[in-house]
Length: 540
Ligand code: F6P
Image (cartoon, rainbow, N blue to C red; front, side):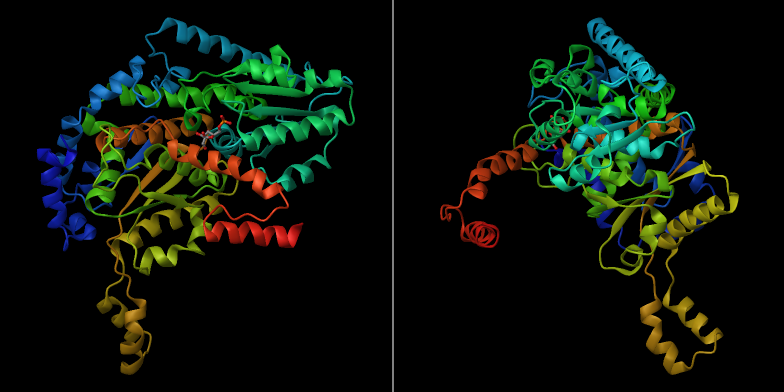
């Protein structure tokens, strides 16, 4: 039965159709308790969703939708380790990496063992006990991986302040473009460099090509035996990693029940423990575990991931707002938009339901964004006055990690002012009054007024972390993960596969031979033939 036949769905569709004149700021004028009624606070995170086009009856219908779609039962099935990733016949147990909810003792034991491995290895490396082939400490850690095997650790290490004791330098290489790796290697000393090859499959072209290049670089300057002290692998396929030459003690295990984009909690997070200390990694897990506990045990209407998911579904599916801007007001979270882009779009960017039927409603919005301050001087113009409706998540922290209060106060002022401006806009009457007050002539006022009007009524959420430390970062990432899960359940799509990505990988592999060959091609469409033949004419 299509989701569209549900009573709550039909009520929401009717509510959306009647929404044309609803102004968010009018909802505030009508209710002095709007913020009280439309925000939640858990795990050191405040989630304010009051600046959305949501009324009490919409909220009730959204909650009814969640219950008609059995969100609570699906959530329990995920935590229980049921094979809810049906298209790959796998359990989805990234939560077992950080909470103690997994009923499978074998899984818990594997997780504990690998966590101990991460702890031991990161502490020995940071203390200098683990060294390179000439006995020198390992100071530069080059992390090779792509997508879920790169974005999480990179985002987290950049988000967490480097302390004086964090003496190793982390470098992330994800692209198959050789330039970043080449440019980095000329600055490094093989005696003090460690490569971490992060690849769940250990077959991804980008990563294996970079790993092979790194190995050539090392062995051109060091004896073959050096490989054992300078390469780490994090993978499901440890046999393949060992065939590459990586020592068994330097192989870290992950499992097929950890999705790539949900894997930073596993050994894929090793660079975090190495770069920011094992305690920081443990705090990250603890923050995520707290959010797991909240998600698993809280009524739907008080449940932060559930409410966040419902607000998103309302905006995308019912109000037809097709994009979501992620706008952190913390420079350290610069990589968060890219991280969430993968998390959400690779999970829910699907158009076929559980029954294999094409879906006739909107699913995952297009996620994009960057740090709010830089965005203000780049694309906020479109947010305020463009023709597209854009929903936004503003993210800030209450207590700064910086030392200069004025800078943080200015950040916060900008963050809160922007969400307010997007909601309130500036009416023609206000613009005209302002122009007149500043001495504008009648002609100038009439001419300029339309250009200065801000329609407002743009929806946004605001998340305030108590502070941007490992614990709160873990909690906020887990919040988004569970939001994605709830949305997948309601949209009736499988959130844990990524067949769309596999297609591109396959086609690129097939085309490589034609790129390498000097022979002109004619077997593709005329555009692809034209591009390949032009490339050959210029480069060969
Ligand atoms: O981008 C597709 C994807 O399969 C991601 O889900 C995954 O995180 C990434 O490729 C890397 O894959 P692997 O870890 O196997 O190298």
